[in-house]
Image 1 (cartoon, helix red, strand yellow):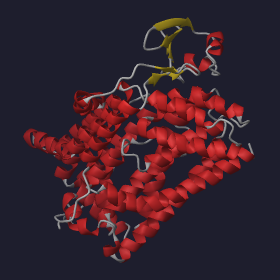
Image 2 (cartoon, rainbow, N blue to C red; image 1 turned 120 degrees about the vertical axis):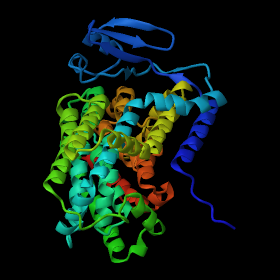
Image 3 (tube, one colour; image 1 turned 60 degrees about the horizontal axis):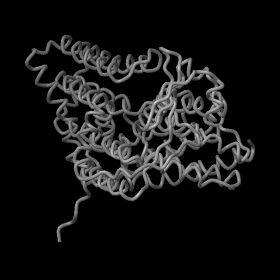
Image 4 (cartoon, rainbow, N blue to C red; image 1 turned 90 degrees about the vertical axis):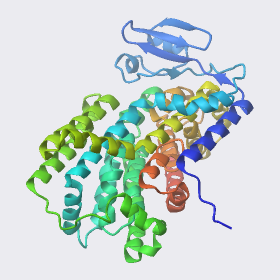
Length: 499
C-alpha cells in the first residue's frame, strides 16, 4: 500500500475552514458591545449590532461602562482600535455559515490580507532580482568561508537578533522575507533547512511571546487593562532571557546532531530537493564577492534596516514596508545594470515563487472571517471568562494561560486580541487579588506559546516557503514547546504568589 502523504498547508487550512463552518452551527451566536474613540470629534461611539450611540469622551463615560482605563490612553492614540465593553455580552440569533460562505472565505481572506500578500510578493520579486545579480551566491560562499568551524555562531546571532525584533516591535509577518535569504546560508553551513527555519520562526515567536516594549502587544494590552506598560516589565525581561536561552540551546543540540550525521535530520529525505529549491546544487562556491556585489548586498540589507526603523519610529505599516522593498529592488537593478526586460522577468518569477505562500496567508485570514461572520468568537470569550470563578491564584494564572492559547486559534491577531479581551479579562485579576499585569503576561505567553504551532497564524506560510510539512515541524518543535510551557507555568505560579 502506498504511504499516505501528509496534506499541504493549503489543504490543512481548508479543513480548518470546514471545521469552523461546522462550529458556527454548534456554538451559539453572541456579541460584546465595543467602544471606539474618534479623535476628530473627540467622542466615543458605543457599537452594537443594532445601533451606534455617540458618547462624550470623558473618564466618567468610561467609569459608567465599567472600563477601568484612563481617558488619556484613548486621546493619546495608545488605544486606536475598538475595545470590548465588559458585561455587555448578548446572545444573538444564530448566524450559521453555509457552503457559500465557506467557498467565499478564502477569496474574502485574500482581499482582507492584501496588505501582507503584496508585501510577500514584492519581497519575492526583490529576491528574484538578487538571485539574478549573483550577490546571494557570492555572499553565502564568503560567509561559509568566514564561519568555517564556527557555524554555531550563526544560530546564536540570528535567533537572538530576531528575538530582539520580536520583543521590541513584534517582528512577525516581516520575517517572511528572511527565509529565502537565510535558509541557503544555513544549508551552506552544513545544517538542514529545519535549523534555519527554527532560528527565524522561533526567534520571532519567543521575542513576541516575551514582548517588552512591543507596541502591538505589551503596550496596547497594558493600556487596555488600565495599567502602565512598565508594570511587570522586569519579569518579562527575565522570561525573554530564559526562553531565548532554552530555545537556542535546543536548536544547537539538534543542529550539532544533524551536522555530525545528516541522516539524523527530520527532513533528510528532502535534502536534495531543498538544496535544489534554494539553488545550492548549482551554486558556484568560487564566485568572487566583488565591490559591486558588496554594494548590492548593502542596499539589500539597508532595505530591512529602513523597514525596521520605519516600523519602530515612523508609524510605518505594510504599504510603507512594501514600497521600501520595491525601491530597493529598483536601485539594485540599476547598480547591477540589469536590462529592463530581464528585470521584469526576474521580478515576476521571484514573486511567483512566493505566490503559494501569499495564498496561505489569505486562506488563514478567511478562517477568521468565517468566525467573525458566524458571531462565535465573542461567545467563546464570554464562556472562557466564566471558567475562572473561585480559583486560587496559581490555578487562575495557569488556566488563563491556556485560555489565551486556545483563543489565539480563533483570534491570531495580537492587537485584536488585546483590545477585545483585556477590558473583559483584566478585572478578573481583581477578584483573585493579583495584579492586572499577570493577565497581560498570560495573554502574551498563551498566545506566544500556541503561535509556535497555530495553523491560523504564520507557521504554515513559513513552512510553505521552505517546503517542510506541518507534521515534520510538530515532531521537531513539540519537545521544546512542552519544555517552554512547563517553564512558563512555573514562572507564572511563582509570580502570582510573590505579587
